[in-house]
Image (tube, rainbow, N blue to C red; front, side):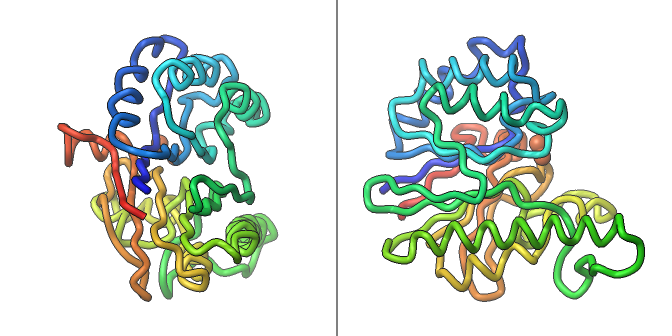
Length: 237
Ligand SMILES: [Fe+2]
Ligand SMILES: [Fe+2]
């Protein structure tokens, strides 16, 4: 199966017509399309409806998505999700689905930093809350992957990065806000064939976890710079 992945489209109300040709090109070359969050720019349902129409017109393959931080900006994540679901998109939030014998597990993920500098739940309650949120997202990812135990090939979809390598290129000061290595152990434990994320617009297109699991940064602004002739990832799974 040819899995295409792209994130951070940041669709606006004025974006009508901007994505349909892109989706048509992607679908000509793939069997499934993953959208890795920041689908909208301000997180409004109106923006999501514009994107939903582009997807309905341009996509001829199943579309699977997770939401990003921008999709929550207007506190209308449910509306964003509803607009996409009505266009046939499978929006995963700690859930899993199967397409053509391949299992897809998705969740947004969250921030917290990487490696031995990862944010710890210590001190103020607000900081502990932040770490709890990330741990919760890691558990959602693990739970979704566990539901796919009988599936031979598994793919993970995130918005935030699970490894440091694919955020490299961003300012060092914001690494902790771009992802968290607490998201990586489930990827290795369930031996996913590939993990796709977005969010780091100035990161690095490809990396791997300490145990060798392939990780792809699918942020559209990044891929427009690094591979302008084909600004999306396609991975054979
Ligand atoms: Fe983004
Ligand atoms: Fe983001």
